[in-house]
Length: 350
Image 1 (cartoon, helix red, strand yellow):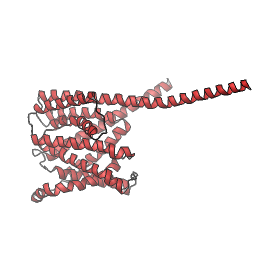
Image 2 (cartoon, rainbow, N blue to C red; image 1 turned 30 degrees about the horizontal axis):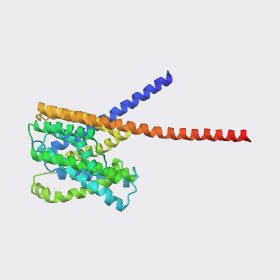
Image 3 (cartoon, rainbow, N blue to C red; image 1 turned 180 degrees about the vertical axis):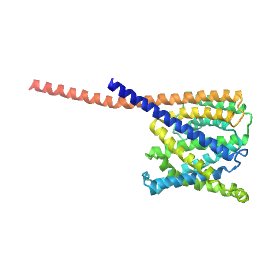
């Protein structure tokens, strides 16, 4: 009973911790999305400068990451040569800057609920780009699954009450750049055995992201900000807490994936999307039509099936890994038995 009770307590504690990590990630992700929408939307805080907002985030995250790595020595920096940094990290920083710029820009034109529906295309983009870059192999079943997701999103877009072509273009562009970044991380970093945690990721990637963002900022937003400089006062509370939430979200991603799994984060992401749609409809008063929900429901089923397939593939891979040592041990045991048999035969002949 003692052992059973201890085991039961341990299992309960693990379940509670897992749900706590999920809840923290959902809360922070939810907060950052709604906060960004609040700042950028012309009907709310009315500061429609997505590049500037992203640069504030990157400056804040870079500073905290630098302090953690170099000043307080809380995290060890990765052993990256200049060549590896320029050939692997900098391209990822460029893709990340484009993804963040376009996704934040979309909040000016589209509702929070519709943006979450468009984000359902992420598995489609990742799989398609993975095939193009020869990271993934083509499979008919998976492609059919991707088509189902795409049809669902298309139906949701068709049913959108406040459809904006430019906003959709920006969000789809953000999905493409983010999907490319995820595939390139596997090609440029993971395949080389380079694993970065969120602090070291921000330490290396955020400065390059900031540098890339400064180029369009100088031409697109800086002239407009100069015109506004007399009538706008930087609110340190608003932008400071917004940046802190963005930094905390990066840590929460590491916590969730590190303590549970990437698949758990995907499932939690689906829950978060439905919560955001409900929040957008009930609090922000965005229009959500039945056709929106039907289309997103279809895409949701496709994403759910895709995650289920990935889980089965991971289980099969783990089972195969566990089977290999067993096969090797069986082979060695058989060799030992054959050796003993030959020894006994030799003794009998002698």
